[in-house]
Length: 92
Image 1 (cartoon, helix red, strand yellow):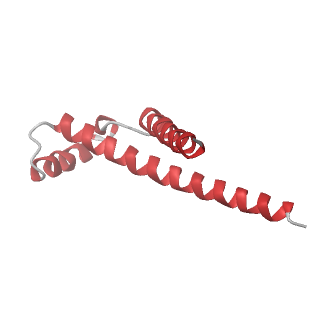
Image 2 (image 1 turned 135 degrees about the vertical axis):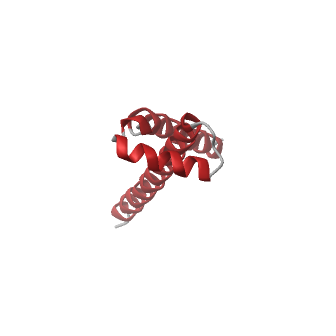
């Protein structure tokens, strides 16, 4: 039962981190200066996207996913380090 609670907590934590990442880190390509819009159009056509907005959404979501994964991994490592310190402190 404890394993199920831990797994569900980790899943919910990752989803919350992902949603915050999408909300606060995602920036559309339309905010890029005009000279960069030409390059983003070339890259989107090169990758097979005929609509630059679709490329913008996929690019933004993939960046947000990578950031959420890195934040989640670092938080889990910090939590494991905290548990190890607490476990060593309780042993006389």
